[in-house]
Length: 382
Ligand SMILES: Nc1nc2c(ncn2[C@@H]2O[C@H](COP(=O)(O)OP(=O)(O)OP(=O)(O)O)[C@@H](O)[C@H]2O)c(=O)[nH]1
Ligand SMILES: [Mg+2]
Image 1 (cartoon, rainbow, N blue to C red):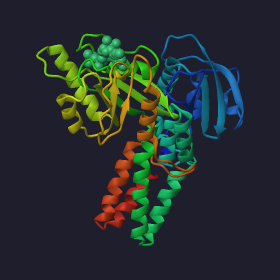
Image 2 (tube, rainbow, N blue to C red):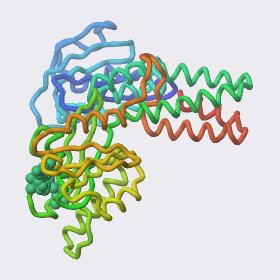
Image 3 (spheres, rainbow, N blue to C red):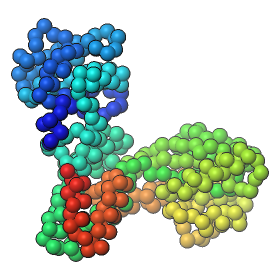
Image 4 (cartoon, protein in one colour):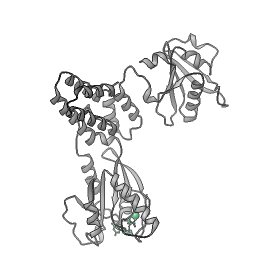
């Protein structure tokens, strides 16, 4: 790439999380001289052959820290890798030393790679933080080029003037990104409803641990309390919210405002009803204003003979105290969030921003501007 040819550049190749080892890469005609500034070894780096490694110490020019043990590997004539301790402070020190010696330190996303395109680089970055195997499997397919190949195919179809097929394939990608790719970011499920119905108790029962305070007095929960779980192999964030009711109490009102924002941002809302009280006007109003997917948990069914109501959305009878219904509730959540299937190796947009980008390409095509759509696709694949 142009940048690589003209500049002296460095970046951290390994993800910026604490690890045993980190790898920093330095590329450019004067990479050896710049590294030599701080790398202490009896022999000059000029004598290091490509693919050979040298064990030495890093004597920082900028930090007062004592010498740090590092391994330097010559990966190309004009490129070195520095393998160092994976802690954030050591990496920051080495990158700072390199910067002081004239190196431009790039964000990993900006590192020019000859073999990976922009989509694959994004997959590589996300892969390092994948919370479950199922998420990693989707990202690995895209890192291997599934989505890039499909986008190249669509570009070719457009260049041949095949608008119909291109539009269909972009629509399919948007659908896959929304139904499957969205699982790569943690799904947000929240418990909502009037006070004292058992929202916090249900969060604790689902998480299998005490995350939220439970009390017989209504108005207990104020903050949004979170528990991170894995459901059917996918990461899910459960949030307990304050009970919604009319109140003049200022702190409770704050809690209710937080609850309303949490509900608005959720992928799935579990509206909790107290089975001993039955359907209330307040709960019916909440259900009527819902925007996301929803389930009703007919809670405290262990002490009620009221049968669950028949509603347009699924209703699950639960007891947070005696446990019946919790497994069924979790299964219903998984069914609603994760019912669509995909094939291994399928192209899947895995970031929300990619879906937004595909929607603007679709818009260009609907406006009959194929040239602009091709240009957008090409830029996105650089
Ligand atoms: N018998 C029975 N009691 C329950 C059940 N779920 C909750 N409770 C009781 O109901 C009371 C309120 O429970 P919470 O979980 O604090 O209710 P909440 O909806 O979070 O209440 P707020 O935070 O005030 O909105 C507590 O005394 C719980 O022990 C249940 O399934 N069965
Ligand atoms: Mg509560």
